[in-house]
Length: 367
Image (cartoon, rainbow, N blue to C red; front, side):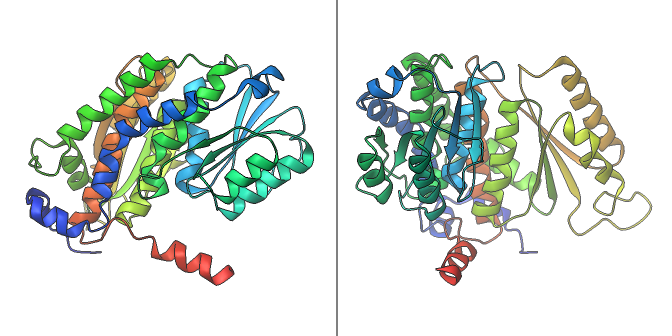
């Protein structure tokens, strides 16, 4: 694997030079995204959409860094939501989706071909539609033609860096249907959490006091296995794996308890575990648990037992915990740390965090 240069993380000038696309600045914009997107959502007319009544289901169509907004919405609304919330990451809607449902198409650029196809499918089926993404984009035009509300979002630079800008409009729409309580106070509390973590994780903060740099160095040279312990921290685990892929060009395994205890845990005894009597694997497992104050009591026991099991086998363990009362706060407390850590890991390994060359080559090959 690439050589690790941990000293690079303690030199702000080296960090800036290694991040020409400004990914760290994009991550630092998270709190501003919450506030500006909340304002844009308030200025959008949802009256006709809400007047039609609560939908049978909400289907969020989106890809990559835009598509995770649907998972954020489901996590904020929680398992008690009276309306099913599901995400679609592809060209077609499920066969059961009909005029009784609301389809929310999310695309940072407003030009993602899979998302546009799903939105067009929604229009053909007579579904209610909502759009979120770039102003003046093909998605904005489609929403206008369908007389559907559209919330314009200013990209922070990359879709994966615009998570909060893309997620807040979905939460605002769900709140209008009474599916969650997420008023200005909850959004501001999340923004404050994001600002606090940005201060603690800033580039000129040394590794021994910077939680994101410390996390990056803990993961370097390992194969991270990231487990959420609730629907909300399960979304954070998925985000962690995706950000490792894109920002650090690094592989990861993600799961959610209790399901991961029925399959992934067996890898503790496999070729990527440390062997006390032999050589360590090139990339040994490293377990990361993302705890939640709302996790099921039995899941809490499973998390603790899993940590003991890993430690007994010499597997490195990092335990993180979501903080705050509102789901938005708790998610923010994990995601901001994750986003910074994955950028720092890419920099420490000598990779520019911004480019997604393989994705672009794939797109070009099928255009």
